[in-house]
Amino acid sequence: MYPGMLNMTSHELPLQKPRTVGNIMTLVWIMLVFVCMVCHASADDPRPSMDLSGKIPDFCQTDPAGKFPDKGGDFCAPVSVSNSFLYLSKSGYPKLRPAAATDKDAQIKLIHRLASKDFMDTIEKDGTSPPRLMAGVQRSVGDAGYEIVRLEQQGWKESTKTFPRTAEVPSLEWMKTGLSAPRGAVWLNVGWYAANAETKEFQRKGGHWVTLVGYGKDRSGKDDPLTLQIHDPAPRTGMKPLTQWIKLSSLDQGTLQRTTGNDEVRRREAKGFYTMQGEMKLKTGADTAILDAAVILQLK
Image (cartoon, rainbow, N blue to C red):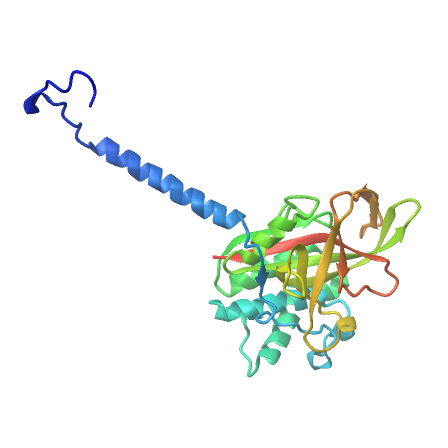
């Protein structure tokens, strides 16, 4: 007790101020702010590791059963997206899966639809840019009656006003948040490059889409924040499902160079971009695989 309070009678003791409506509202506001902060942190901070390789399909883009145009040579994007859609169809979004007797038949129908002119326009364009992949994803989700929370891209590939990039160098943490988010999916655009050791120049020779299915641990199960798991639709990985563990390594120097569809040459600093090593199977003629871009999706 403070000096002076010892001689007070009971009726002279200071009364505790009653809790007012204002006090209660302040407490409620503080609690709401705290909840929002926790939710925001959980959305922005990915799990340390994740492995969906046993749940996400791994379809080969040249599977003869698909009867794809040009034997599926340019179908890496629609196949990669279809892998994720089949997984999401069993995770609360059944309308993403076309009606068919088997999952394989359903995925083949889905791949044809995604590659068509009204979706990704893969056939006419001999491949799929990030904006056209995103357009196909957006329309597919909308046609199925679902809503999109996030559909974003990062990287130095093409972008449009409708589908702008949020960064030119793909962020590893951003990709992890995409896969670890509830109802999320991530697709990676791999660039095939010829590397010049003397000039430190990387000349892009082509590109490829794969499905991200996990991260954070190597094949032995050891924690490794620079390891990704992918499902690669290319026939060089085989016709049967095969999860590959990819080791990322950040470039600290050099120049990236690519030729656009308008025959314009684009160059930019390579620093910050990731090379994809480990079990990554390179396309014939390429010295290096570099993570050029990525697209993330989160459904409502």
